[in-house]
Length: 349
Ligand code: NAD
Image (cartoon, rainbow, N blue to C red):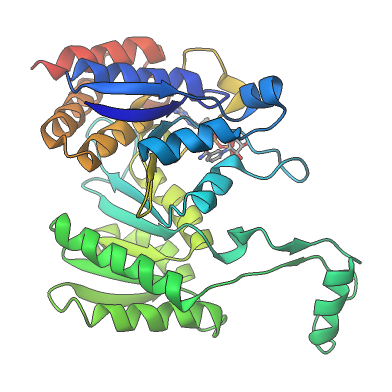
C-alpha cells in the first residue's frame, strides 16, 4: 500500500487529475489517496493558495499527484507550482517527450527527456520594481549600463545546484538506458551564471564516461530540436530554458495534452502534467487527460510499480493510435471521461 497526496488543482485540474486517479486505481495498485486542496479552492476556503496542511501532507507522504494550478499574470500571488518546487526542494523537473502514433504532428519517433533545474535562475523570485531602493542600488552598480527606470529580476545560478541537476540527468540516463546527455545554456553571453552551469556539467560528465556528453547554446538548440530532434536524447538545462524547451518538445509530440512531467527531490516528488489550468475549459469535461495519466504512470514507476506503469503507457498508446475515443486536440470528440474509460478498458488487454 502506498500513501499519495492527491491535489486536484484548479481550472481543468480536477477533470484531468481525477481521470488519472481513476486509471491508477484500475491497475489494481493499492494507493491510499490523501486529498488536499491548493490554488483557487484553497483561496476560497483558507485565503491562501497553498495551505500548510497541503504542504505537510506531501512532506509526510513524500509523493503527490497534482493537477495544474492557475498563477495570476503580472500581479497577485506567486506561483503555487514554483513555491512547491522550492519549499520541497524538488530540484529536478523531468519531462519526457515520446511520440505516440495517432497524435497530430509532422514529427515521428521523437524520444527526448528534458531535465530542467527547478529551484534557481530567474524563477528564484528575486525581483525589484522600477524606482525601488533595491533596483536603484543595483542600477548604480551597473555603471550606466542600465536605464534608471528599469525593473530588475535576478538570475542566481549556483555551482552546487548545477552540479546536482547535471548529476541527476546522468544518473537518469544510466537508469533509463539512455546514451547521451546534452547540456543547454547561453554561456557565451551569460558567462558567469550559465558559464557556471556549463562548468559544473563538464566536471560531472567526467564521472560518467559511459554516457556521451555534448554542449549546445539554447537558441541553436531550439532550432535543432525542430530540424533534427532525433540527434538528441537527454537534455539538461537551467530553469527558464527548460520551461520553454519542454513546451517546444511537447509540441513535437502533438501538444500539451500528451506531455507528462515530474518534479523530483531527495525527500519528495510531485507528478503533474506540463500543461497549465487552461481556465477556458474549466469544468467542461473536454480536455485531454493523457498528460496527467502519463504523469501518474511516471509516479507508479517512481514507486517501484513498473508493471502497472507500463500497462498504463500501453493502454494510452492503444487508445490514441485507434483514434476512436480521443479528445478534440487529437482530432476526436470524446469527452475527458470517455477517453479515460477507454484507457481503463485497454488496461486489461
Ligand atoms: P495552459 O497549458 O493552461 O493552456 C494553453 C492551451 O493549451 C489551452 O488553452 C489549450 O488549448 C491547450 N491545453 C492545455 N492543456 C490541455 C489538455 N489537457 N488537453 C487539451 N488541450 C490542452 O497554459 P496557459 O493558458 O498559459 O496557462 C493557464 C494557467 O495555468 C496560468 O495561470 C498558468 O500560470 C498556469 N500554469 C500552471 C502550471 C502548473 O500547474 N504546473 C503549468 C503551466 C501553467
